[in-house]
Length: 167
Image 1 (cartoon, rainbow, N blue to C red):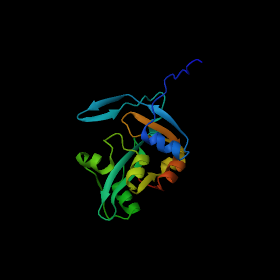
Image 2: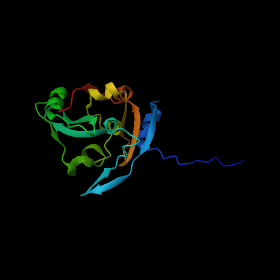
Image 3: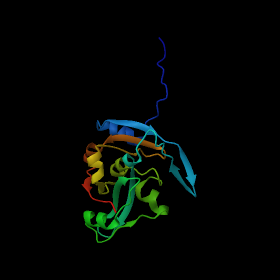
Image 4: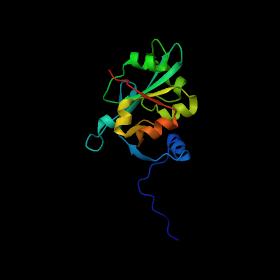
């Protein structure tokens, strides 16, 4: 019996295993990375992927709720006042980089709404752009690794809320 040829299949991250378990369809993506300062960053090949469909996961903290998560396109800026209002806080501030792993379990560049919800059940807010676009890319829990999936399915999985988060 011949062995099955695996080709260039990527191993599944914990996030992808969670998506499989919950029967959420996704497509794996891998991007090159580089280190800038002491932070690893993703290189985006603009020929294959529209940057506006790649989403960043930002972790902030408010006095009422504690940690809250904002998910928005990487080419946009978060309006902290809008996230504060949506989350029921008077004000929210970014979680300091040195506290990020302790807060979420993920390093900068690997934060993912799926993993954060699974581990911590922090409130998660998606910018309305995600719902309008339908399919978005979010981190799959490792720097340079992402999953493309339906934004509404993702929001349902993580009990997320769509709202206006942009500057």
